[in-house]
Image (cartoon, rainbow, N blue to C red; front, top):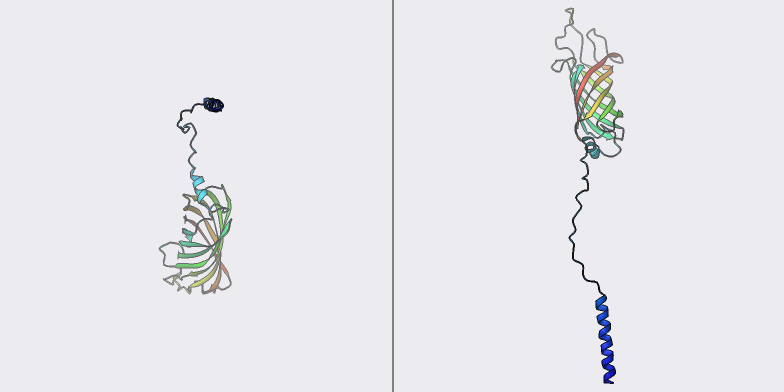
Length: 220
């Protein structure tokens, strides 16, 4: 029995030695080195930066909330705008105007309050757009301060109020994601509500004259 146990023990030890001899030697650890030949992503262009910050589905020029324009013509003055409603291709603006008939420093003041639609007619999809803005406003025009006409007769002109139907058509260029510069033409027609002209004629119900001017300003 002792001989058989010895033979069995030798057989087990031989099997363990054979299995250990078949285990492959451990491989040395190789540090992972990140590849260095992968090209870096290109920096975004100025137009891509602007587009990335414009809300989706809005045309160029529709992302701005405020506008400030200086107009030179008949009348001349400052126009301030606030975007009340915004759509993809148009916005509804509330508007105020303050100036004078022919010069910013004139004494025949012109003041107005109204609303305007602002459409993006066509754009390059990046930074430039043709804008069109029809508007309607209540307009107050002060009478001449001297109250004398060119022939030396006393003028019978009084302060006048009008309903102004006008439109802006201009080119808008985005200077940055939040600021755009605009230049264009304003033109319109005045429908009389109250007051008298220098001849004493009532302006009520008449299309008395047109308005026209060149404007420039910023949207932000």
